[in-house]
Image 1 (spheres, helix red, strand yellow):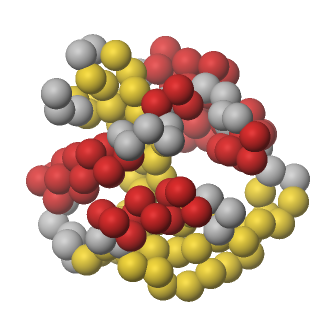
Image 2 (tube, rainbow, N blue to C red; image 1 turned 90 degrees about the vertical axis):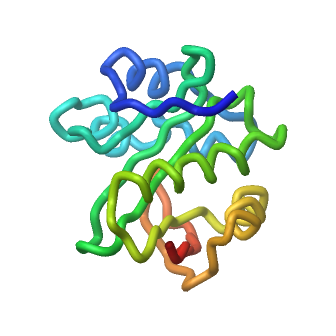
Length: 154
């Protein structure tokens, strides 16, 4: 069964923000872990039409956000429902996101950033075809963390 993508609804955004909680180190990705990120995610004006819900069989299973870097490059952020992570679902989801993005935008590059502790996600992104570009430090969740910038050439 394939993914269906649509602009996220307020109800879906609030479900993700307040009910999706990850275990252990992955709690870093809970929306409530960073007040600024949480407020941007649940505010429909801030979110605009650039965050998409991913559903399977009419069930919310993941999301992704798009921000334009320039006319030929976008940056994405994505998340999967916690009970579905670590079970081999990521490859199909990320490939479906790329297919959706490429059908909607004329691009050369898709970028993303991932916390360097998230070896599972980095391995997945490499398997999909993303390449490492650089690491950088970013203030978030009340501290400073190392992230890895990755690129996918369309």
